[in-house]
Amino acid sequence: MTEQDQPADKPGKSPENPYPVRSVSMMVKDWIDRLGTVWVEGQIAQMTVRPNSSTAWITLRDPSADMSLQITCPRDLVHNAPVKLAEGTRVVMHGRPSFFVGRGSFSLRVNQIRAVGIGELLARIDRLRRLLDAEGLFDPRLKRPIPFLPGTIGLITGRASHAESDVVSVATARWPAVRFAIRNPVVQGPNTVPQVVQALRELDADPEVDVIVVARGGGSFEDLLPFSDETLCREIGRCTTPVVTAIGHEPDNPLCDLVADVRAATPTDAAKRIVPDAAAEQAMVDDCRRRSAQALRNWVRREHHHLTQLRSRPVLARPLAAIDARADEVHRARAAARRDVTRMISAESDRIGHMSARLTTLGPAATLARGYAVVQAVASDGTTTVLRTVADAPAGSRLRIRVSDGAVGAVSEGEDEAH
Image (cartoon, rainbow, N blue to C red):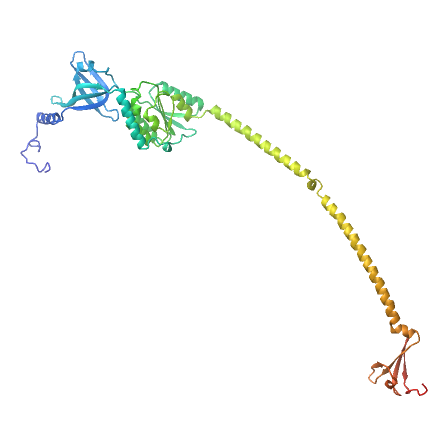
């Protein structure tokens, strides 16, 4: 049933029939009284104890959220508390929620106050450590690398603290051009976690910030307790900018150190880790240049020695020696070839001379020179045939008689009977 569906004559359901203030206050008080007693834990953010009043007013703050609760208790309960109550003290209180109808205010009326012991705090921190470890917030593979030379360093530390002075002075001395974006939240007490978380979010959203440093000097276990808070640890894990923590001194190890990308022992150590030393880098550059020049000279010297060795080899020292040696062989081969050719020509010339003499001796010219003649019968068509028998030259046949110095014509008279 909606408010419009309520009967018009029912009190508080229409502007014509509203509740009076006293009725609403009494109903709220009645609802709150039904809650009964509760135990609550938090940090004391403010405490007021007036000398002329029997009541003490305390503001109890949640260390992990920006929330607080008003507490009232007898003055003697504050004085007789198991520990000295002050701002930042972590306590557990037992009381009943109460609504004061006269002022319309809510508070928790406390009848017991107990201090949270260090042993219990250590046990809680250990349970939180195991939880965060199981979720992977401590995984080394998720650690972001620190830039070699950050342009702007986001620094979260107490105002005018030694930690701020150490980080700024050491970083500036090592690299004078470094810039800082400084946030100064409170680093002790109930407001530490929300203010540090807010500073982290601001610096992480700044695109010019390359690395964030959370620094605080040494202190007691209770002073450093906010840096083991779950909200702060998870906020560091969500940052996209690398985070360096330098909380306390070397033995101190809050949980945010395990979540951070780099854990520094002290604020001075944090400055040394994130900013290179200009003098050391210059010395390294000079050393690299010297070593590079020496390596280059050694390489040139080695290559020069290698070339000298190559030039000293016979094939390069006297490159024509092999050709000269082959030239002698060529000359000898040419002389031998010429000698052989001459000898062969001489032998063939002698053979040809002998054959020519034999041809001359055996040829018809030599026979004709000795007084012989060659008789040929001349046919009517002018062809000639050698006369071999008498029958080849009957009477009246034309004859051609060849002698050594020419030929004469004749006519056959027939066979010579006298012969």
